[in-house]
Length: 58
Figure 1 (tube, rainbow, N blue to C red):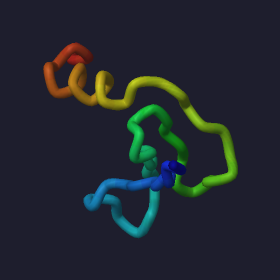
Figure 2 (cartoon, rainbow, N blue to C red; figure 1 turned 135 degrees about the horizontal axis):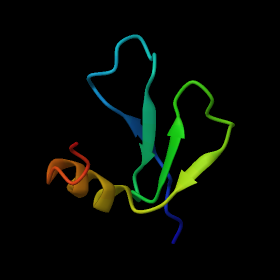
Figure 3 (cartoon, one colour; figure 1 turned 135 degrees about the vertical axis):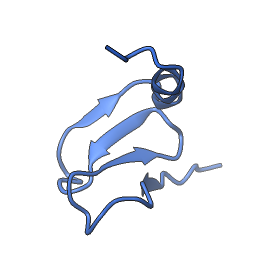
Figure 4 (cartoon, one colour; figure 1 turned 180 degrees about the vertical axis):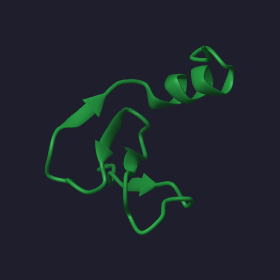
């Protein structure tokens, strides 16, 4: 069984500027303007939850 990797970006993005895309497996993030460029690997779901929980507030 092969898993297809799909990249998604926010519906709130304006004309594709300053956006990132997240892979459907939630383990990689990339710059939407440079899809062949470097990829940040990590747990995007854990990062999203931490942001929502206010762990990065000053």
